[in-house]
Length: 254
Image (cartoon, rainbow, N blue to C red; front, side):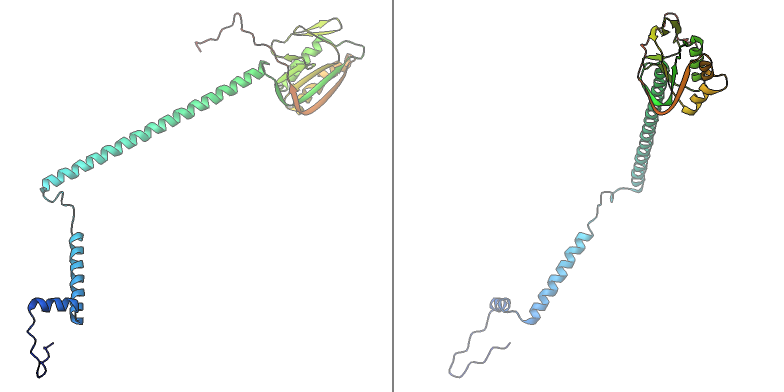
């Protein structure tokens, strides 16, 4: 903007220096100057962003082609070794899991067999469905042979456990002998009525007692009365003490 001409009678103002003009422009910039300043700021920001975007890792920039090939081969080898180690560890884990499963299966099988043998040997109380046979003497004493036949027929019909009069457990070594006023079962004196509890399939056990010329018919022919109850739950609580054999030993050659 040109300096105004001095009015008549006034002294003319001295011309502004370059520094004064710069200070005046900074204090009161024109619209054109403001636009130029904004454009310069945008250009500067774009330049800084471009520089940062183009900064890359130049770690391998100075390597020769053969050096780069060696680096890639080393990485491939390390990857292969890692994959091999992972495969070995996974195989070890599978083997350990299989070994654990096999050991648990063997233990479960051994426990099941031990439980079965304990039941057969009369070492533990048992419960389950079965029948209760009550033999009442009507003046005529029972025949020991008929008692033995009853035990054998019940075993053959699938009896898994038996007891007499709720006191004496019947096992493979059980002995029955005549006694004054009753019978001896494994040395225990029992008197009538004789109650035989047998655990197994109730229908099969009943059939083992009632077939023609079977135990029931034998008892009745001797003058005794026989009552058979089929029970869905029967407890046999009597047990025998385990005894170690004096002569028999396991055959380890088989």
